[in-house]
Image (cartoon, rainbow, N blue to C red; front, side):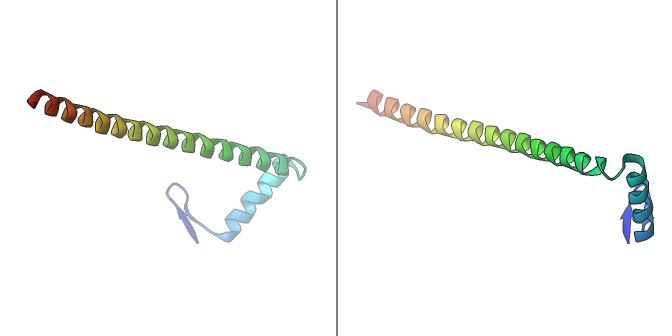
Length: 83
C-alpha cells in the first residue's frame, strides 16, 4: 500500500482504476506518445541539472585555482621584498 500526503492510502485497485481512466481518456495509441514525450522531458531536465552542477564545479575549481595562484604570487612578492 502506498501512502501519499494528499491522497491518503492508495491501493492496487485505485491505481488500476486510474490507469483505466487514463486509457479511456487518451486511447491506446496516444499513451506511448505521451510517455515518449514525458521521457524526453525527464532526460532534458536531467541534462539541465547536470549542466548546472558542471558549471558550479567549474566555477568552484576556478576560484580555488586562482586563490592558490594568487597566494603563491603573494608569497613570491613578499620573499622578493625581503631580499
